[in-house]
Image 1 (cartoon, rainbow, N blue to C red):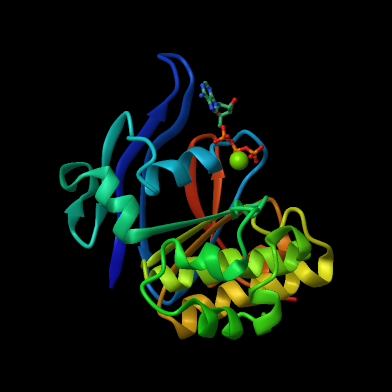
Image 2 (image 1 turned 90 degrees about the vertical axis):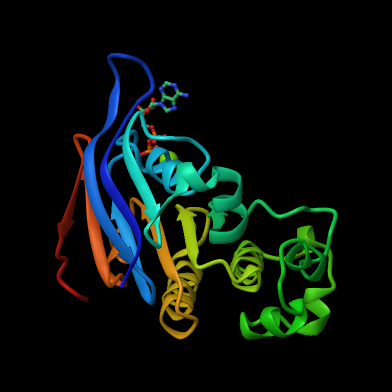
Length: 214
Ligand SMILES: Nc1ncnc2c1ncn2[C@@H]1O[C@H](COP(=O)(O)OP(=O)(O)OP(=O)(O)O)[C@@H](O)[C@H]1O
Ligand SMILES: [Mg+2]
């Protein structure tokens, strides 16, 4: 069942610069999507529209058949969306436990444990964790918020190959085991190979593509 639907969505920063051009797409829970595309093609712009940080110039976005603009973008951001960024975006003077608690609807420690952090690591200062561990905390925060859509902008961009692989497989588990709709934008074919569905964003258009598995 579709949880998020883009209908005829276009976006222009100025009259002349069209970034997204009449896009239609459907996203479902329990699936991991990867949107591939070259730098500057509009991937972050697209995530910001889906996440209710900005509004399309034309077209509509529905979450569970409700127009997100009509329901209020602030409510959409608070109740439906979790963002994960390349640089983790955690509050660095807090511990993982405190970071997760900020938006949690459940106890943080068990969620952090599921994501592979020990109790000691969960109570350590964020800056004393590796990049991979910090990204696990960001995913734990998204999971504990219980919001159904997880949007990730180049979430493995700062990680080495092995850690990137681990984090990608955590995203996939998050979609499949916890019934979330995970949408990742990336340049990485390695991330795309793990996706259930791959879209390519090119020339303002979104097209579903198939990628040969490893
Ligand atoms: N505030 C803005 N005003 C005008 N143009 C902008 C603005 N933000 C982004 N753009 C332009 O819109 C286009 C798409 O930008 P966007 O950041 O969405 O690309 P991207 O696919 O995320 O790129 P990258 O892979 O490098 O992160 C780019 O040409 C960019 O210069
Ligand atoms: Mg970007």
